[in-house]
Image (cartoon, rainbow, N blue to C red; front, top):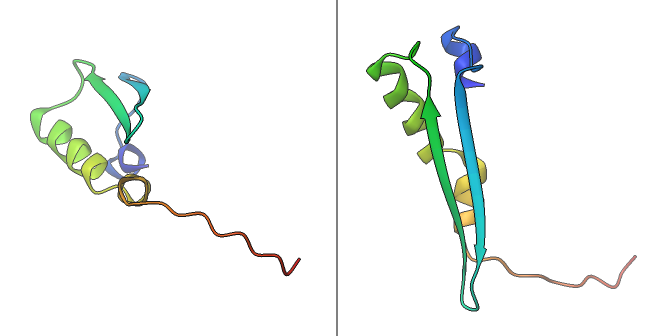
Length: 71
């Protein structure tokens, strides 16, 4: 979405995510590879957006499950 906003193609970005489920926690290992068409400034903006992503923030918090029997 940020690439669209910046009006640059995201075709040359590769993202790899690996999920590691440990007994005490779950770790998302990820790598981002940029094509030659990205400037250092663009890369920095994209990486900052990844760090501030609302989904990442949600998944980084403790999660609880509550059963609601009022269905």
